[in-house]
Image 1 (cartoon, rainbow, N blue to C red):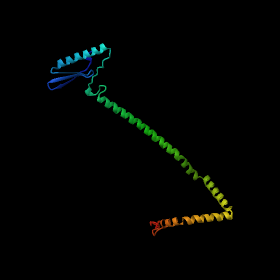
Image 2: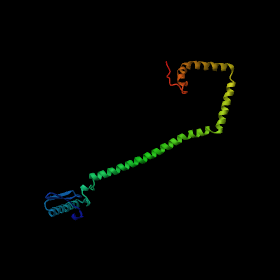
Image 3: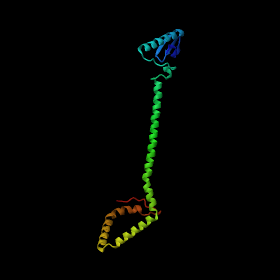
Image 4: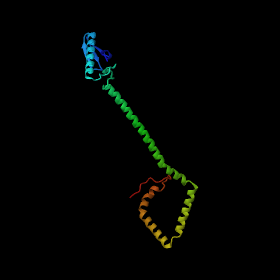
Length: 190
């Protein structure tokens, strides 16, 4: 590469010029533009010769300056890379979120399926026959209970009724219909 391959950035500040070779980080300042440009081209050539003497490849000539943000390592480049990385992370999170939502919905659907099947089974004729047969078996069992066992069950039911009587007395005013026909809103008294 030659010194002429590297673009220059020229700025005018009052009565002097600032000429920059952004790819190499060289800057010259002076009142005569032609003189400052010649000096920086000489500096560029000396820098390229130093790179060649050291056996190191010089930076590539680019048509941009640090002010335009295209130089590697500049703040603008970092900002663009950060924005791209952030967008990629958000996209991945969105895809993962959609996948998790779909998996959750499928799990809920599968969990509810047995209940839906159970409800449809309850409505079938077979279930009606099973319930009818079960009630008949319970009735047969109750008929075959001995009089002593029957008296024992009745006595146990009386004891239970007597022990829950105070609770029923407190609940009864709430459940009794008032004048309008609905349940009474009166609270139980203690």
